Image (cartoon, rainbow, N blue to C red; front, side):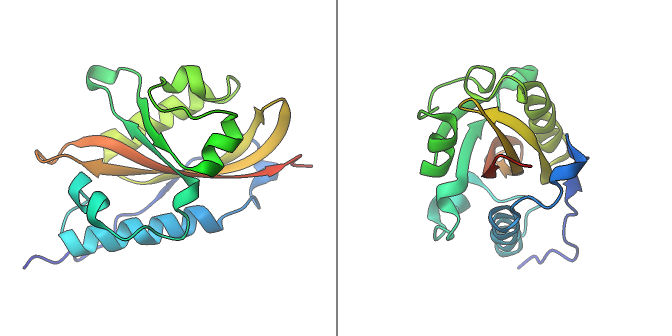
Length: 167
């Protein structure tokens, strides 16, 4: 049996707006702890799709969204989203490209961070502000790489938490 001797660090992207550094952290912290537990159980640098499918759902499952990483730097696609993410976006984004579903003022940064998490095979957490359904929202998001059977990042599991206003 192989054991991981070190824990992958988390890259914290500088906040898009440094004033939101105190935004909700619970969903992201619990998601990261769950993801790390799956890494330790499987002995991999990231969990596999099979591990995710067979794992007990954490309490923050409603905050999750699942992205399929497109080859060649193409635009990632939503394969699923929990009710909190659907409520935030105003619709179920399954089958949508990130650029078409994510708030326009935050989409460029989101795509960059998604590609970075996949390329580095490391979790990335960020906080910022975006307009969600016409309201300014402080948000925190974490992106967690998921491996396919060939040990490549095929998907990203994300968790999103947000606060109205952000003043």
